[in-house]
Image 1 (tube, rainbow, N blue to C red):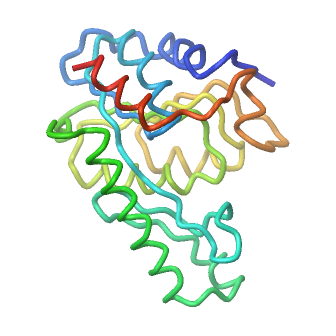
Image 2: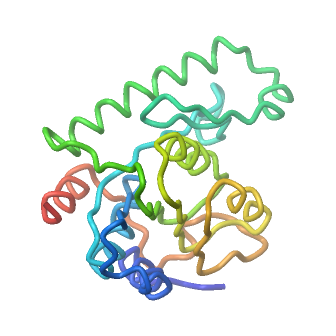
Length: 212
């Protein structure tokens, strides 16, 4: 099993696998906050590429918010695990309530992180979407589908770790998957890091300002 010192080391190791893209003007790097922006920052620096956030939020179950029923992206794109929702007999109205709640949180974060800055243009770009690891894959799939609507030239998903059963699904949603490890059994993303401390909103803002 791979073990990273912290998110920055994970980003540096992913950047090594993407170095052929360095200097290409079409390349942009998008981090899924909060932890993903730290990994993405290392990749953007190594490739000399613009950096921005792409925000998606998990739609949690009403009785256990850590259990993902799906996710919603900043443009409203929704991915739902319909089989799980049906299995747990969760009413549609509760799922819709959670979707709207997460869209409000996305709006708050967009305003906080970006301020008056316009988002990077995705159309005709080589987009590298980055997170610090994938557990269920819901937020990642929602992000990939939302990005696809913006007509990028290519979408590369770059993550340090993800569960092996998720890989075929993820590969089907992007043009290329760059990953460092996919062990089984997969328990939690944080177990792959020596330091997996919480990334604050202030840290995300600081990283984005430094890249302006």
